[in-house]
Image 1 (cartoon, one colour):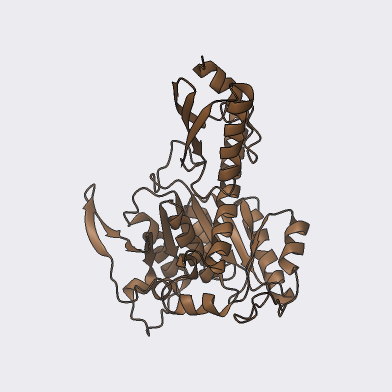
Image 2 (cartoon, rainbow, N blue to C red):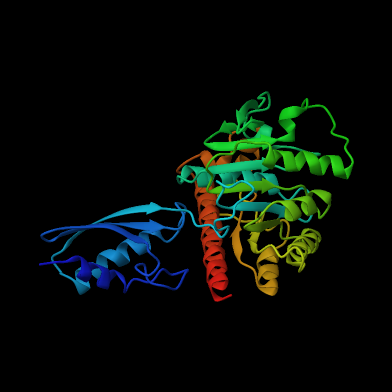
Length: 362
């Protein structure tokens, strides 16, 4: 006769590959039910974008069959509760579990394209996602999400008038571009731009979110300092291309986040435009901007290379048409962004787990 203690003992042999602890001690096993030889339970992952979901599922089945009963019929419900390192004191954006900056050292490396496709890929996997377009002087999110003519509505929350983010493709959006004409130049000094950025966080009703991505302007200026000073970031993703000029500036962005009085974890590096793939010759690769420059930099700086994205015409066209390429389920391109989203979510879970462990040792 199978009992719950046997099931828990078996599942305590299954190690979560990233967190290096067993599923039982991590409290990832819930709702165990046993009917004769039928065993069912829920595995609660740290993110719906977990790239190791199938591996963990199979490991659990193997553990029950091996340690409990070789004739057991195992049914597993895989779900997720996105982890957070923010703890109980979330004075700003209390219902947002992770705030992630998407940064680059220089313009033109595809940072907004990466941010947009990361957002839709996470949303497609079931995560609750928001995107702040913090590129105050060159907002591109309204175009990329086909909401150029949308205007956020207002509502009263706890006696305060707040903005309601625009929603597109399952992603909540706010951008300074919603408050200006598309052809209008935004000519603001640093303090005014910084105040506008802060309002996109503090004067908005973001609701419950697993990930709030922040598409930063290129460089390391006022907007970046405002963000890291006022907004509790989980970490930052840095986007570059393989060429030396872009890598030099990307390294400056990494070093900014690592300054002791800023100290924002660098989640990883994305190497965009790694190689060119002609649509008619998908097996061919041309390394127009150099080869593996981002990979080499990530290894040298000791940060994770989250992914190497190809230079593909359809990605550019999808962004210009307001329909991010990551939405095109079943395509090679959407698969690439799915993998990137999974890699980022994986590193966020590791950062959160590490932060909790360090806090418990203090």
